[in-house]
Image (cartoon, rainbow, N blue to C red; front, side, top):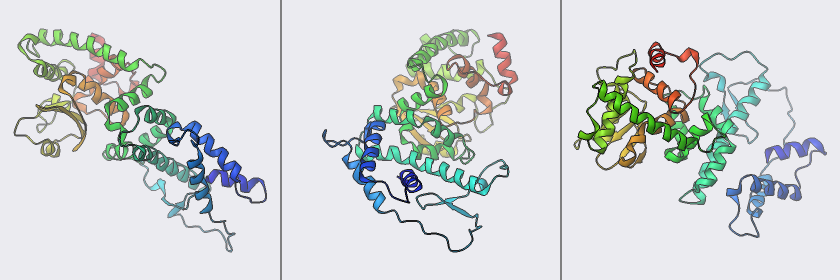
Length: 360
């Protein structure tokens, strides 16, 4: 609506959009975002047009400034009149000098984009207690570029990133959506990517069991039940693909950066508060499995799918743009290249990974 008003006032004698133009915009919005269609088949766009007209009726005509332009830089305002903090004070690297009007415009556009993104899923939640997966997926596809700019920007510190992203995108608490995001990042045109990735993981998983027994890093699978078998493989993986950095004494084993089996007397919340790492982790209990990041529980899944737990962790590393812990960086780098089939930048190649690559 703000853009419509700006265009209309710039073209013809400072007029506002007509009702016909507002109706045309409502139709286009419904075509572009089918999830906002009305319930009645004969009024799919009228409710959108009414909201646009209400927004238009609340717009005040701009007044000409009587004095010289203000030189205050503590705040900017977006076209909707909402105060926006200056982003240059948050950046971790200094910004190059630029024209103040360009800086204000860029900050406004960026913050408007973030607010719009956060509103979209909230709107879907309000429309239904069980949001339609296809509609949310369509929306996430449309806003992929702006969302990744938001997630990877310097505005978010890494320790705050998971909380902020999950507040804006609660859909990433669902494994299906976070796996879809992984596909968008690595092979966006391959609709079979997730199933192919799981097939590669199954083949890798089988080879690791044989290699682990041969290296005496784990017991033969026949002596273990389902959950014990999977946890034994997960525990052996950091030993088979070791990193040059050892885990801290408080962490204990490197595998604790991947998963932790809760005892019957252990409280998940208490364990997360005392955990020395904030990276994604799988907590295994008698009833189910939980993925947590920092001290925040994110989602749960059935123990029958525990063998795919590391794929879910990798999806969260990618979706939330998180850094690998040093004590398991070699293992996660191997999963990145062998299972996810995503290349590693030359500057990120560690000596341990290069050694594994030569052996492979």
